[in-house]
Amino acid sequence: MNKKVVDSDGTEIGSLHSITADAETGFLQKIFVKPSLELDTSRFKKQSDFIVIPFEAVSAVRDVVVIDSKKIAEQKGSGERREQ
Image (cartoon, rainbow, N blue to C red; front, side, top):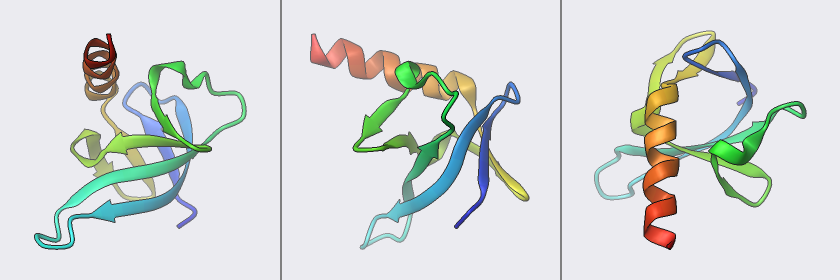
């Protein structure tokens, strides 16, 4: 899975590492992205060396995977509120 991942603003996020799905329903849940070296990853949820993006933030999959920047900001913001 060496597909490039970009956000809706055109910023390169990194390369697709893996996708997780619900075993019972088959619905895709998350994508794991190996971030580009120059990317500021502070606005993303992370797990180990990967950025974790909910699948509902994926807006297109073609030659590249496009994620919706607004949905990522909402995800990160809601995660910060829960941790406080």
